[in-house]
Image 1: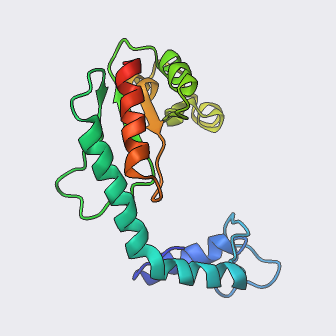
Image 2: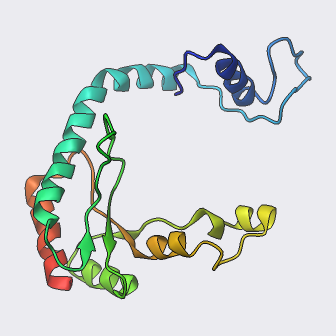
Length: 178
């Protein structure tokens, strides 16, 4: 769902989601390269209900992030995420810690997995993606800062339903492993 007050942007987005047909195009005319991203009625109804729950969902996610901030602060070998002071609201899609340079992320993942803590690498630098390499010729080594940060990010278990006890369990496991 996209919300905008810019009418030209809204027209462009409608065209792109409707197979590239701009306002005024006929059935077989396509002004733009587009996609079939039209929303069906059931998805729209579900989205409307979810929007009414949004404040609660965001509050729950913020609570879990706050618990992680408290429990992970000061654990040697990792850095917790910091939200910029100019940020007005975070949706906390994921909680990503950064391992210190020199730590073997894959080994940390295996050890945490052995303790029942599912974690995932996060994020792969965009220039590693096949499309970006094919389209723009990007190669590994081109963006060393991005590559370094990408090699040290670790997404830890996170959802708006994560309990305080689960956060404490993750923090305990990280202390053991690191």
